[in-house]
Length: 64
Image (tube, rainbow, N blue to C red; front, side, top):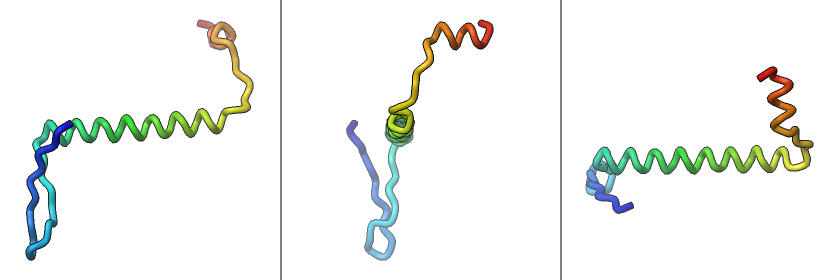
């Protein structure tokens, strides 16, 4: 992804960054995907030793 930031200065120092909305939305989506991946990995690690339940049993237990 190529970004096209505009820097806004205050007192001679970079203070803010402005991005085109499309770039901002793409970055937001990437960050959300990354956070979801981290949560998934943490949950997988937490349940590493747990016994699994076959899908057919879950379906039966739920009466589906």
